[in-house]
Length: 626
Image (cartoon, rainbow, N blue to C red; front, top):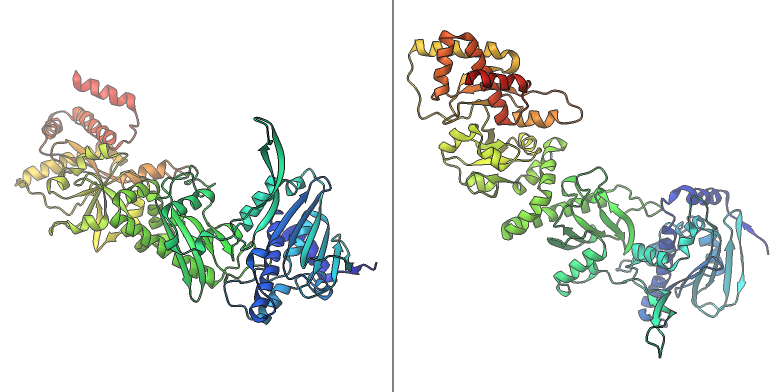
C-alpha cells in the first residue's frame, strides 16, 4: 500500500503541534470528542433541508473505549462520516477544516454552532499516540475507508468493511516515560475525569463501559466486577435552561459540582445575552474567603466555554481584580479563538463580555446591600478588603465604581455603614467626613484625638485595616465632602471654649513650647497647645499627607524606606500637667526636659509606636516618683 506524504508545511505544523501548541496533553480527548459532536451536528443540519433524513437525537452518541492491555483508546461516533476524498482533504492537509467549510457552505445560524474551525484538533492525538487509525463511512455511501498514520512522514488510505455510518478513531497510546505517564489515558477514572472536565456539556451522550462492583446474585457479601455502559456527560448545561426551571438548590449544586468553593454561595447571577455578542453566564458571590485568596498563589478567573466545550479553566480577563472573588462560568459561541482553542485572542467580544459581567456583579452587590444587609455584611467581612484594594489600585481609576460598596464601622451606629449613609446624616455645620485609624475598634475608641470631634456630636468612621487610609486618600472625597483624620493638625472645628489670654501669657506659652521643641529636636515637627484634647494631657497630631497609621504600615513592609509622619506634640493647656510644665520651665529646666520626654513617650504609647529607649523611659518614671 502506497504511503502518502504530508505536505512539507503540514509536517512542520504537526511537529510544532505535538511539541508546543497545546499546553496540556489531556486536551486531545476534548478535541476528538468535539470533532465527533460536529459530525453528529452535520447530520442534524442535513436533516433540516433533506426531507429523506430524520434526526432523532436519542439515536446519536459518542463512545470512548479503552483497551489497557493492548494500549488502545478508541473514540467512536454515529456522525456523518467521511468519504475517501474528505479523509484526504481533512486529515491529509493539516489545518484544512471540514467543519469550517461545512459551516460556511450551510450559513449556520441556529444554536447548534459547529465547534471545530481550524482542522488541527485531530492531530493533537499524536501528543499521546504513536499511531492513529481512522475508520469512517460517510452518510449515503456504500463504501468505508481506513486512514492510518504514525505521525512521522505521512499516511495511508485503503478500503475497509463496516456497516455503520460514522467514524471510529483508534489511538495506539505511547509507553510511559520518566516525564510522562501515558497510562492515565487508558484508566477508567482518568478518562472520566477528562470528559467531565472538558466535554461535560457536549449535547450528545458520551458513553463508556464503566466497572461497577455489585453484589453477586444469591449471596449476602460476595461482590463481582461488572462492566456497564454509562453516559458520562451531563449534556444539557444548567446555563442553557430557563431561570424559571431552576431553584436555588440547583444553583448551589452546580457550585458544588464545579468545585468553585467548599462554602455555600451568598448569591448567584444567571444571565443570558443575545445581541451583538451572545453568551450565557452563571456567576457566584462566595460566602468565605479561599485560604489562599490574599496570596500570590491565588488565580482569579471564570471558566470559559465555547458551545459547551471548556476552553479555559480560569479566564482572568473576564474579571477585574477588584471582583476577583467571583466564581462561575461563561459560555459564548462568538469568541475568536486561536488554533489550539486554549488561549483567547484578546478581542472586542471578550472585553464587551467582561464589561457586562462587571456591571452585573456590581448591581448584584448593590442589591444585597440594599435588600439583605446581613448577607452583604457577611460578604464584606470576607471581601471588603479587596474592594478597598480596588479603590486604591490603578491610581484610583475604579474608585467611582466601588465607592458606594464600601463600609466602615461607625462611632454612632456601632456597626458598619456606607459612605452614603454617613453623609446623609451629617449636620449642616459639619465640613468633613471624619475618620480615626487604629489596630482595633477598642483602641480607636480610647484615642485622645477623637475628643473634640465626638464632643461636637460628629460621627467618626473607624479604620482598622491597613488598606483603609490608603484607599480613602485615593478617594479624596465623597459627594463633595473631604475626608479628614481626627489626628489632622487642622480639624476645621472652632473650639467652643476659646481662652482669652493676655499677650504676655501667650508669649510665655509660646516660649515654653519652643523650649520643648528644642528638647525633642527633630523627633517632632512642632509642639503646640491642643484645641482637640479634653481629658487627656497629650497626643500627637500630624501635618502633611502621611498619618501615623500610614507610617506604621509603610515601615512594616519589606522595603522599609523609613517614611515618617510629620508629628506635632499637642499639649492640653487645661490639664494639671500643663501647670507642672510651666513651673518647670520657670524654675527647673532639667525637670522640664524630664517631663517633655515623658509626655513624648506617652504620646508614642498611645499611638502604639515603639519607644526608642525603654530603659531610659522607666528611669524617667522613677525620677518623677522620687
